[in-house]
Image 1 (cartoon, rainbow, N blue to C red):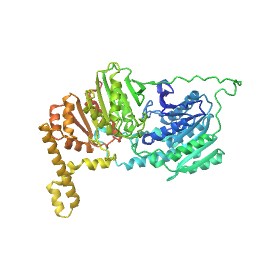
Image 2 (cartoon, rainbow, N blue to C red):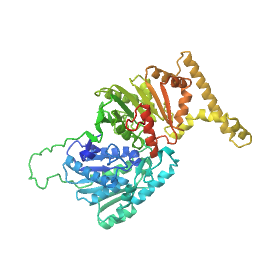
Image 3 (cartoon, rainbow, N blue to C red):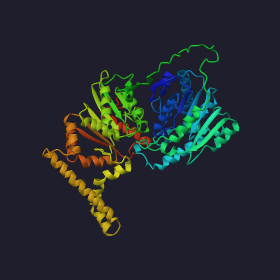
Image 4 (cartoon, rainbow, N blue to C red):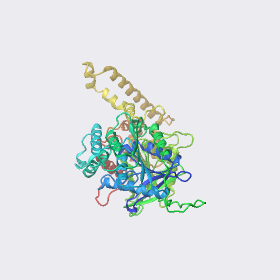
Length: 593
């Protein structure tokens, strides 16, 4: 039920989607329209679960990335975002109708996807039903909501080298131009002149319902309306590693779909009855698309892993291949869609880039008998090795590098440690170097656990103790900090001593780094300036770290200002520049990295 990856729509502006075909003739076609930005990342599991449940119930289901999002063409800054999103819904409808062989479809939209689905449906006559989950009713109110959420992040001002564009409104790692904001502001479901479909199901959130105005308008229009307030919205929008599929909403949507009347097949009215069913040819699916200077291909590795291979279309291949590994449970587009942008940037310079979902995350299948959405899974290393073997088998590839952020950084480094033949690894903001099941995946917990050295040094500052004697410091907390610092210093000394005399030591990062460096694998670490992983690296690597730095086999680069996942828009360009330098890649047009 995982579906088939495919591209559809205009060849010059292809949309990426997943087509879930039922085993027999489909009862109908369901097109799923996703939310925008960070909500789309968090709700990925839910969107996939909805498509798989519909397919299991006999429906052909299509979930897709809107123009400028996910794995589709374009980006947030392109002109005409709202018209392109509405046109994309139309293209998805036509594609689903043709594949299912039906004349009408049902639409399902979540949050902004519900606003877009209802708006697009109101202008057509081939949408027989609409499901809206926690719908955005007013585009203007939605823009204000995103502005408030962005302000709550509390990000500081960017460096002077990265002056923000005053036209842009940041939206938790994504962007809305003034044109996009104005176009969204013109959309209001409660004031629409036409109903979106003859039958409508609204599944609003039970904590903060927002669809009442629209429900009144729908009742006045005479549509067959069903409205429920159900739990699950908040958990659906948790951070990806915590996100929970809203079972009550999924089940309600499937029950409602099951009660819909049958949809007529294409050409049924004109065709004469025949005693033997006539097979309908299934349209060929496109697995490749051209995006300007690059080509992207949907690939499946070992029947398990789902990935996107990005290749140069105009630049001569340079023989270098890059593997991008999941950051936490974020699908292969990466945090804030960074991986998609980086892959296309590097492929345009001649690299071959694979961004892949490890098993049980994103669009990859879950291994038999294993839970899904496990970030530090027992199979992550095998998944990375399979992806590297796939890249190694591609024509003209001479060297491989693995790159990852957060847990992806961990898995990239461990691939090198465990013997994968790599030219280098780029390790971005790792939060641990030795994962154990008792560790928390929450960033604050990682920060507390890894800052003992930093706070310990502060605790040994004479000025701090003068304040303590004057009663200006919590003495109990200071004592705990010193104890942690002392323990880390003892552990640091013990590791270094054991390493020098050749005695093995369990979980010795310094020994791992020396082993990787000894195999001539280039080690590049990149940190947001105050990310806790930097202090952890210094503490756990011990004397091996400065030694490898002096040799030039290990490099540490820092970027002051971003958060752990590089959410501020200015930091996207800053990270790209630092990664280009880490790759030794120089822009010949500008002479800068």
